[in-house]
Length: 74
Image 1 (cartoon, rainbow, N blue to C red):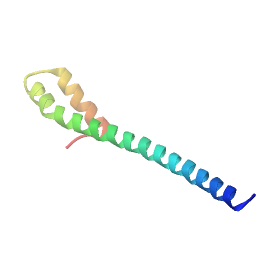
Image 2: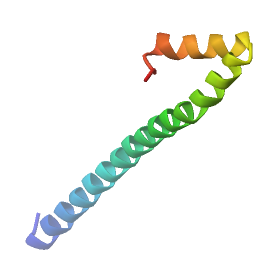
Image 3: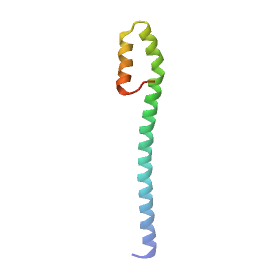
Image 4: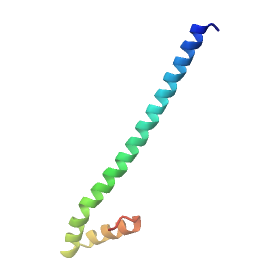
């Protein structure tokens, strides 16, 4: 293998590794974003569920209990 071909092979390897690192970072970022969105949604529903429970909604009570089981409580 001559010097130019070694350089080309090394560049291809680096590009391949950079692409894999980028893809992994994107996947991790998407998962973190989904989690953060879920937590934000749950937080926005808590006051509505509490209000529904105060007005006699058993379904709101069940939803609040499920948050407690999931460990999502204030």
